[in-house]
Length: 108
Image 1 (cartoon, rainbow, N blue to C red):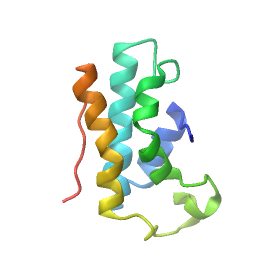
Image 2 (cartoon, rainbow, N blue to C red; image 1 turned 120 degrees about the vertical axis):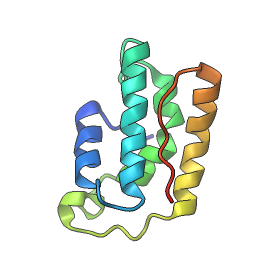
Image 3 (cartoon, helix red, strand yellow; image 1 turned 90 degrees about the vertical axis):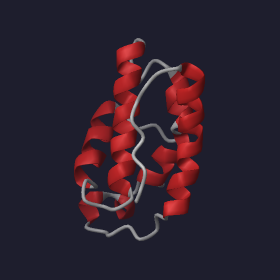
Image 4 (tube, rainbow, N blue to C red; image 1 turned 45 degrees about the vertical axis):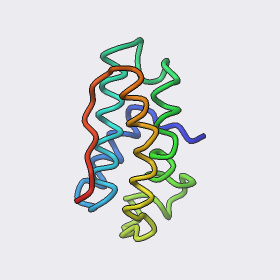
C-alpha cells in the first residue's frame, strides 16, 4: 500500500489543484488527514484512515514515479471519474463507521 505523508499530501494538493479529478481527490485526502490529526495521535499513527484512503492515494500517486508527478508537466489523463468514485467508497464507509466528519469532494 502506498502511503502519502503530510508533506506529500500538501504537495500533491497544491500541484493538482486545477486538475478536474485529482484536484478534488487531493483535497479530499487532505480533509481526511486533517480529521485524523484532529481525532487521534495523527495521520501517520492511526492506520484506519490510511487504509480507507489506500485506493485514493494509489489514484493520486500511482507508482510514485516521475511520470505521475505534477512536476512532470503531465496532464494525467489516466484518471477517470469512475475510478475516483470507486476510491471514495471506502472513505465514505470509514466516515460512517467512525463518526468522524470530513468533507469528501465529488467530481461534477
